[in-house]
Image (tube, rainbow, N blue to C red; front, top):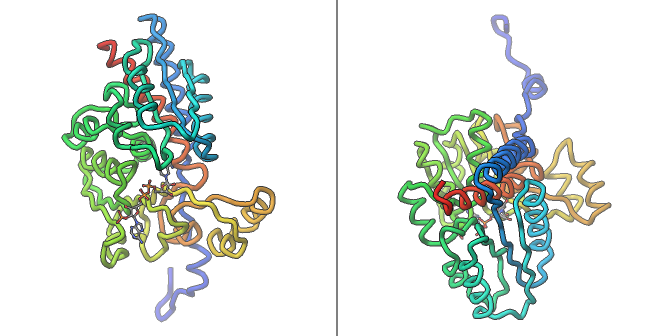
Length: 325
Ligand code: NDP
């Protein structure tokens, strides 16, 4: 307690300030994967069915190779059957459409995922629309997008599903919460807004034309950043005590930038840059968010891990629905 006439020493406030609690994506992802593996086992036992996911990759984009390898490995670890189709970069839209038509027709295939981005010569929209909506485990087909916006049960995009799981499994209140999403992409911003709305959050979506962004984001109890700009969301954007979900995955190669972004963790990150050439940062400035937010997701180790877990769950869901279960 302060005595009469005393003032709190600002240095002391600084020292006593707690850092934001980190929300552990790995723990939640492992929980989801364990549940999926159990359900797959039950499906095999009771119905003799093994769900099958086909992942299609076109070209040699290094990030896509890593993502696809992760998806195939995780499928196999959980007892799903998986096929990996790697097509050459010169593949035409028609060739890809033919492949999808064949996969749609195969009764043993439950999920079809075409890894994005596709080479720019390929008509991405036609490809997405060619996938049977019942096998569209990425949830990008207009029928699934429509069902999601109507609040109907559907295959919803994986990263948004993972974000909701992370919030719910950490007992973070969604119903009635002020939520703000920065970013309006089809993959993250829009679908996560729909999922939050379904759970009775008040939802605001911001984007590059939003005026006075920080005055809006500062109202949010749950702030989601899906922008694609390293450390864009600063302390001034965050309501004290808010939960901050960082979807961004950006590479930092510059040591001075790492020092500015990572605060106490900077030396560790600089070592990573020296060893590997880069370190990952999200769309949230970690050192500043630590001073203001109540909870935040780390990058890496946050949302990224949940995307694959949610994909596994979508594949299981598609397999059950196709069998009328
Ligand atoms: P997009 O590039 O499709 O969308 C970015 C959004 O950010 C757009 O809506 C854009 O607005 C908005 N934006 C850009 N600049 C500003 C600004 N200055 N102020 C406010 N809004 C801005 O990105 P994605 O949604 O595909 O991805 C976002 C990030 O998330 C990326 O870093 C990506 O790598 C990562 N990601 C991570 C995943 C994971 O598994 N963790 C999965 C998917 C993505 P406008 O619409 O007006 O242009």
